[in-house]
Figure 1 (cartoon, helix red, strand yellow):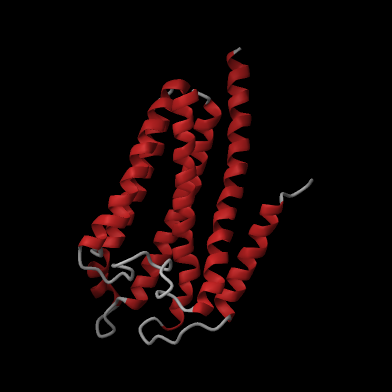
Figure 2 (cartoon, rainbow, N blue to C red):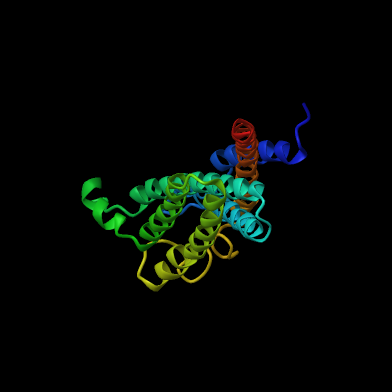
Length: 233
């Protein structure tokens, strides 16, 4: 069985990102220390999440235009994998914050409350919960056509809510999270040149991995749909 070139590229890029992320030199920052290497995982997964969500909404709009259930399946699959990437990004970010934002003079649990009140964490949690409601909504509707139409409209709403919850509102409030005045890691002043050599390939690698997983989910969904349609006949 032939493997597409972009799947091979995903494997190579992720191997490079993991090995380079742990072994290549990074800036010596007293507050971050070696935890700065988490940039290659936490931020890159969020970038992959946004790209997958963007592809998902494109397919939702295509479904609203053409009423082709294949676009609904693709929209759902990209949204699902994007949500997985978001959960991984959220988890790695929360762990990172527990090491860098916690008060060293107090026990970890004493700083937990102030960390969880961080606007970026709250906004990210809201965005993921909105997408979680997308899947609950889908499962609550039995009719395939109605489910696809309602889900497509809700997916547009969920995607538009990403920007105020993640990008706009948290920047209007005081925050410990870097990038308050710009886009973290996109501004060349945010990360060292040595880190950019790993960061951008890591973004592409995680995105391609997400697309790879999505294609597998789409194939499974299409097979299941064919079985349902054949049983109805």
